Image (cartoon, rainbow, N blue to C red; front, side, top):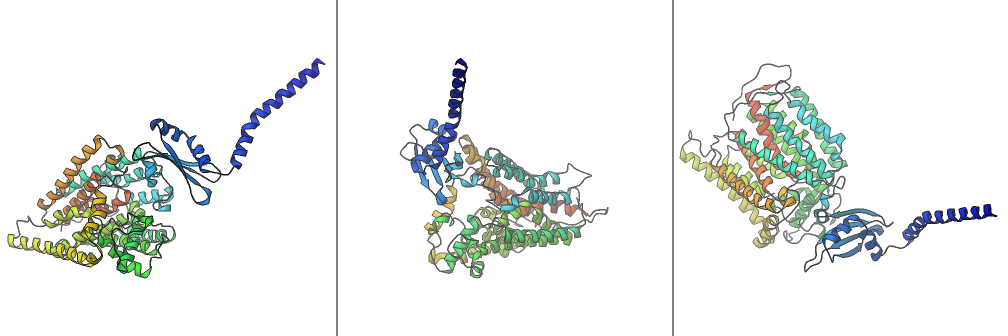
Length: 545
């Protein structure tokens, strides 16, 4: 009898234990079977550690849920106050599972969340990116002098890849300091090259025959074109260009009337939208953010124009070999493909700046091209004093001749600026233009620079850096360059790097604004000392032009 009592007790204990273990599972199953309501998803999000931390930091915070497509939900946590601020965001799928939860700047900035392929899609794959880095560095590495400045300069350009890797992992606390430090390095090194026109570094040694660079370069052209067509996406800046072209073609107001899915797309210079017009005529905008073939075409065409102009500049400086070297370096640089595969238009200002450098001895063209660059993206406006003073302080030329060249430069600026103003005047008021372009950009905050990420005392430091950048841009007018193309390119790249370093909003696409000129400075200067192909010992001297 006692044995039966013991067995019964053990059996009851087992049943109770099983019930204890199974009850949560059953409860969860029944809970998941319940329909999702705003109250339920708010409760689910509120159980996350991020929401609990933000509730403790923001007493009295309120929760709001909004239903999205496919039965998913977005749950926001707002701080208490006259102007509530969104301090946390959670995404809940149709099964009631939290798929994402964010706080801080990543609530407002979706591009800071590390979504795979948001910019450039497959170009971010290590299987594509790392070979491009090797292709960029290896042909110019001098094994006899591994510690030469050229290696560190090229490594600095490739070093932005490390920053991008952390950005793609949503680790802005690491990515931002890296990019800022590299921009500071570029400012210093490019100034050192630009302010020393008579310096003669060791010759440029090629690890590969230059004809191999031609073959590899053609492959890289096919790679970027193929990726752009098959796998490229179009981000908001490319979309904005297509919208603006459509508005111009139909005589509609350009600034202040962009669609809701690209409300800030009217923040660029008017000439940028005008350049999209012929492409938009061929591939008209259908009114939605679809594949946007016109944007793909613009990105590809101006990318290849950069390579072509670098070839022409290298050929003018020395010979076809240097032209091939400069064009190849651009084609192999991974961030140039990053720009193209994002459907971005950031190669456009670089094309105008490169054309101004190529034709810098023709002041009328130099003036028109330099202002054209600033009427696409406004940052190149900082180069106007530099280009205006080119050759002005050459004592071997009479003052009357120099002043006439300056007058022609100013005329070129006025002609292009005036023509652009006349084209857009019927649909654009000066106030709308200012409010939606420069005023908007000056007031824009972002966590992609040390100034925006850290705030506080860093803002004070930013004012000093911005003041130094303005002084540097103005000082460019007074630097005696005596028609030296390398010096002009180096100083232009230094000013563009300083502008980017001082800005609150910075992104990797902006490297296209300065890298082409930096390549001329970094590779062109040693090539003028001598260019040594593999297994060839003799050097050929060349004069700076």
